[in-house]
Image 1 (cartoon, helix red, strand yellow):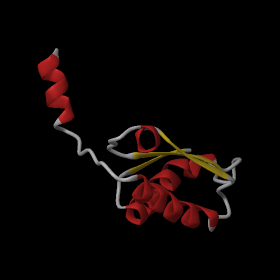
Image 2 (image 1 turned 120 degrees about the horizontal axis):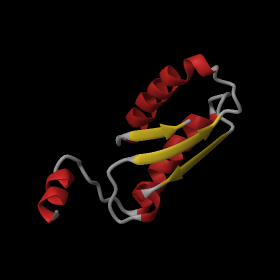
Image 3 (image 1 turned 45 degrees about the vertical axis):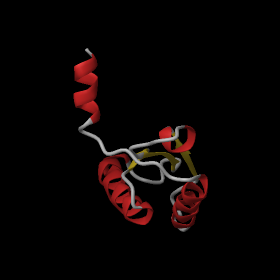
Image 4 (image 1 turned 180 degrees about the vertical axis):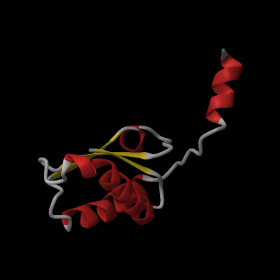
Amino acid sequence: MYQRVLEERRKFTYYRLSQSEREEISRRLTRFLMNREEVLLAIIFGGFIDSEIFRDIDLAIYTMYKVPIEEEYMYEYMLSEKLTMRSGYQLIPFY
């Protein structure tokens, strides 16, 4: 069991940032999302917020159905790419 956990951990890259570095990333993401008309609410959660180390940034986004359901997948993909570029870390949006 322990060996399997170690092998699975090796598949991911983990990061450690200071509080000020995390706040700067949060500000960059906030500035970007505030300019998007369809985004009504965005919440960062998970390890980026409450852990000393993290491997990605979890982001919940609420659009109140401003993105048509048939376009959700492409919207998530496009937004994930743009947010990852802005933050420098893998971002996982939950739409």
